[in-house]
Amino acid sequence: MEQCRNIKLKKLALEFPTYAKCYDIVHKGTYFNFKRCNTTKREKHSKMKFGKRFRIKISIIMPQWERECMSYKDLKKILKLMDPESRDEGFKQLLKNELVKMNEFFSKKEEEYNNRFEELKREVADLECDEDETQVIDDLLQFHNKLVLLLRYHELNFDGFLKIIKKHRKKTGELFSLSFMQGDNKKLVFIANSLDKLLAEFLETLRMLVQIQPK
Image: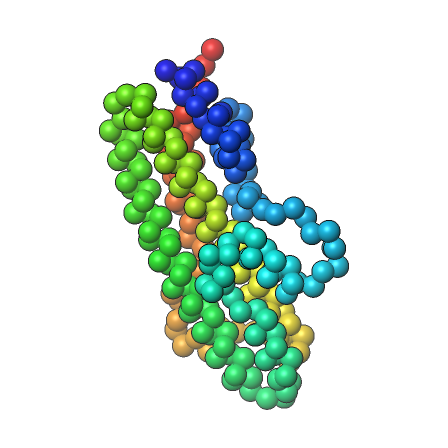
């Protein structure tokens, strides 16, 4: 059964390049950075501005989530027009709206994926035959794909957040604070990125299901 199971996983890894890293986890015991998988090729123009790279990556990797991503262009535009001596209320309000938007989306997806993973663990516990096992492996790998995409969403938008804060500091000469969130910053799941536990559990479940028996 183990040999058949590994062959099935290998076929999935070959068919879906994103899954190849999962195959490496199982067969080589290697751990990889989920944030860096499923990425586009390195941009041909290394001097391309961040804003353009940001838009291109979103349009290629997650076009279905484009409206849920940070409006970096709008933030940059309002920052450019801002008087360095002003209280920058317009910028802060727009940034707050963007953080709330991303936080709500991220939190919703995180809850959705946690619930889905609980279902998958029950499927693993209820395995009875090879056919069921094949389906569960496929379900796990499909879940992995979604989890990677959410991690990529976090990475891209958090990079955008840090970039725009850096530009704000350069414009005003002041350190930026989230105090304007009026307590909402304590609930910013998006910034905290609490997917680490889910990722660790997923890796362990996948290893247990498709691990190679010692020779």
